[in-house]
Length: 304
Ligand code: CP
Ligand code: NVA
Image 1 (tube, rainbow, N blue to C red):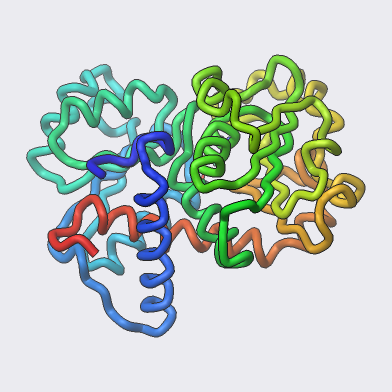
Image 2 (image 1 turned 45 degrees about the vertical axis):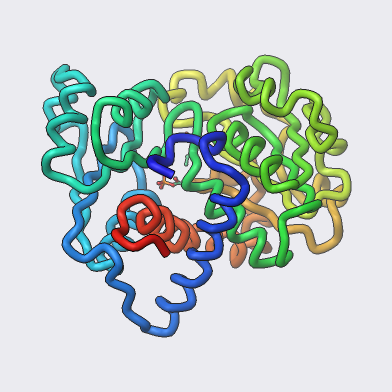
């Protein structure tokens, strides 16, 4: 594994190996066992969009691994004034040991990887959010001890989260059901990937998607960059809310997951959010552990 650009780049074995290392690093961190596996290494973090979890978890993760992280806002980089990503990649490769980038176009992340000579990690694009899905898989595996055969339903926008959950979930042998309105379906490349897989369902009916689900997942109806579409999106997604009524279709005790930030009374009710707060914030915490595992796999000298 040279980069983490999207879930389809990872094999099932690579995902398992990341999750196993993440579990181990979580154990070591909780038990105050130092693990300076990236001593002396530097990660550059380019942000063209806002972030709470991604920025803080990568920055703290690099510190816990004995390295450092540099926060590089695109407003301050020359990239924000038009320096090509190809040149940025070649320059940063001379200083850094790895780059994490959060941006709009998936192509920019792919170009960064193609032109640079160091590992690139996708910290969210309009197309994919692989770091989040690895944390989700870790959290689900913590609860159910396995992923194979677990049913995840995703309710709402066929966005970056839906795209990555479909690919990641199906790769791990999960059943994935997506309920999304017409016009807001997941990316065609992802639907091609899932086509013909009996474990995949795309429907306009949230109750059907949620039937017997072990995990009920949702995300904002208006992602970063879609702020102007907010009013029309609120209308399009009415009926796609994760609430008590919808959860009656899922298995009793089903998990609720959300990548956060969450918008109460839109994609999820306040009640459901608070009842499931522990598992939602465990999911957020697991960003730290799983990303440390990814960093070690990509930037570590000795592979763990
Ligand atoms: N879930 C997630 O990526 O959160 P941030 O936008 O806060 O980084
Ligand atoms: N779909 C959301 C996820 C935020 C973590 C967005 O892209 O804004």
